[in-house]
Image (tube, rainbow, N blue to C red):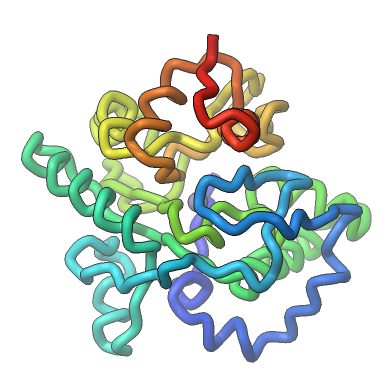
Length: 260
Ligand SMILES: [Zn+2]
């Protein structure tokens, strides 16, 4: 299944600002925790960020050479950028450089995504799901929400998560499950934590590709990596059967929390 979105969804918040993005009509019975104010916030289903949440310090533009070739030329031509929170961006560029030295190719497909952009992304997918014959809007929301976060529930709003791509034979630079069979993915599994990045949506106990992991509520996303700092990433990779959301929730009440 192809889970790729258009360039404009990721790169142009101006487009999102002008879109008719009525959030309330796609929001379920979710309460937003207004206390989130740092990049170790647990974010997931039913744990959302306020619409106004922005990375602090502000997200920085990602150098073009690190962006997927699929988007790069258009971004350069339009003088547009993809952004990421500074500390995580620095760590990610180091990760990509290090991978390259090992003969591994990785590019950034998307990173910081403001609330309004996520809203537009979700609505686009919702419209497609309805056109594809969803029974009703609630059913469509439920289905889309296994592969796309509701506005406020996306780690991309933190500015510390990135979708990474590599050239998959016969497929190219796409966000697809086949990434799990690449050397790039295997390298990430072995090394990303050393740079502070962890996989947010593992396959977990999902029965089939395309089924959501009951712990996260989302499908397996081998491309989605979140920065939580080297110390925390070292701890998290030792956790078994604990979602990142649960790990970070534990960490909030006990900074010395470790999985047993
Ligand atoms: Zn992602």
